[in-house]
Image 1 (cartoon, rainbow, N blue to C red):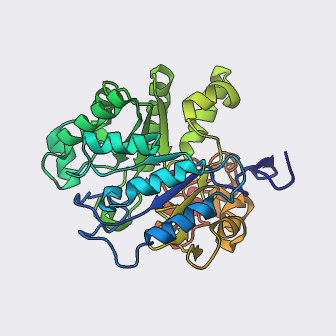
Image 2: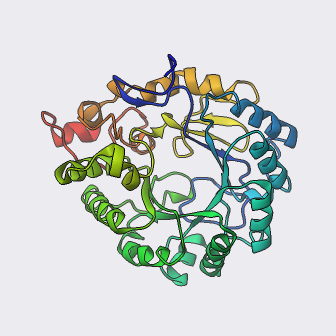
Length: 371
């Protein structure tokens, strides 16, 4: 490896040169008012959204990251609210970027739109399923018929050969339904099932988080499901799943490099600002979409320089600066806790993740909870 490249160093896997995943919120306009949405979606496009010319310039910035280039996930809002979406995808893929899409299951997303996106170079899509039935799912989405459209789109993506990821909310409202949702996604030909553990931001504030004990039980259940599933199972904002997986693999004599890659679905250590980057509809640069601390704007700064050198990103990548139990946890290299949840609960993105029940030796439960 060249000096400065992403390496396994004293802090574990450091993704200090380039993110693995770059989430680009190209608009906040959306016709679906999800109860758990991070973004405060609006009916129409924001007047300060990146223009077509600025979007093109941003894609050129992304090309300045070291190879392998980040996987760009275009999200929103509903990306299809931008009429130039297909041109943006085509330009990005023409420049060698892998681009996938996280669309809304609204009227604009049709089989024909999926086919156009595939022709433009989209490699895959992700869809949300937050309930095993229409009643459960549509109640969270706030739009009748959303469940049926989502299932039809999933089937259309499979027919077209697009890689499909299903995203599912983990909250007190969905926890009991997760086994049934798992049964449903098994029928949809997916490549990955990603479970998002609620962060109380945006429209998600009124929803209820699960307890740390429930989170631990769920992680063990997910690991068992991963052993028997044909698709990958991953978590978002629950990096402590990697601790559970590490412990289970060690007991079973498995390795992270081998079977662990299949079970976890992405390298250990990836978290906000360390392998993850988020750019908003108006060009603001964040460690993730769930951590609302801005480090710059692509209109004024290089996204590459910001990711590599901004004090916010440097702090988040340094696990020795973490506080409370996350700072003293023997798993903080592979996990690191959710920086977004720490910030949401304490206002400090270096504090401990309150959803993880693990208590390192020599630290009390009360000490770990408040720092």
